[in-house]
Amino acid sequence: MTTTSPLNEASLTELQTSMARLRDTVGRRVVGQDRVIEQLLVCLLGGGHGLFVGVPGLAKTLLVRSVAESLGLSFSRIQFTPDLMPADVLGSEVLEEDRDSGQRSFRFLQGPVFAQLLLADEINRTPPKTQSALLQAMQEKTVTVGGKDHGLPQPFHVFATQNPIEQEGTYPLPEAQLDRFMMQIRVAYPSAEEELAIAQLSHRELDEPLEAVLSTDELVAFQALVESVAVDENLVRQAVDLVRSSRAGQEAPDWVGEHIRWGAGPRASQFLLQACRARALLHGRAAADRDDLRALAPSVLGHRLVPSFRAESEGLSGEDLAKRLLEDQRD
Image (cartoon, rainbow, N blue to C red; front, side, top):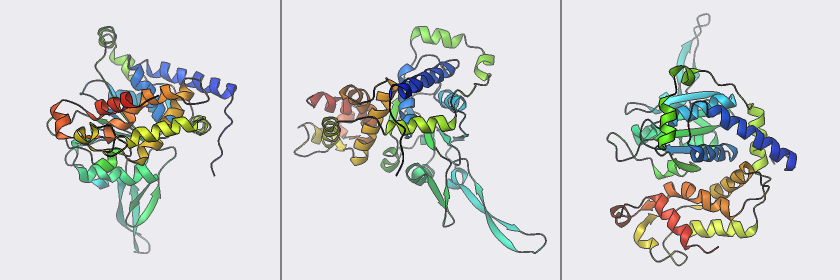
């Protein structure tokens, strides 16, 4: 049984101070994107994985790399391409011969997945065969190669970037893999003022190393605090009811059957409540509330809802459908 740290005013203050330092450090490279950074921190504190979606050039890769530096985590980046193979992600066994004895044996060479923070860059530019190589790693924190299990470093997070699926040369992620991401985080274009500030950043400022403002042990301690955040029975019921309403049936609004081809599963309820706890901590609260659920539900549910042909013809995304479910739910 995992032991969690006591949640008191001192621990809340320490966490907020540390997260503020982290935001300031990342802000030396990444201008704006406050909502994106907050949701990234929710994923980190909640022990989950994040999928960042946006057109190229919005600093998705730079943001993840900057966070890894600021946290002092071991970091790997994989550029997903159409010719990438599962062994290029997980590693492989090689046959070696002992020069003295002449005996041969297999040795496992670790792939880039063996890092505390893995950046899967443009994950939807590689076929599903290679995308699926991350399924076990994201769920079980281990990989199996040659019939042997290999544990991954802890903590372990996958932050993936994805270009809009309409772009040429992209492959949709399997539903099983999408479900392993705690949140899908939309990265939008910057405002005019932010874009002016971005244009004035020099290459020297972007290349300057960032100081680690948080140790791995401190991050793990903060993640343990999340489990101590209170969630009352009413909020649990609201989260479960919201998820269940995405599936056509008696508990769903009338429009769901025509607009949602596939609803969210039970893992969505777990991730939604965990994300609510993490957001409450970020805002200095010892208990999650309805505001946390409303703020996070579209990002937690959006990529789990498969729009029907009718919804797609109306230009509705999974995130749009999740927002509509929220509007239909009574407080």
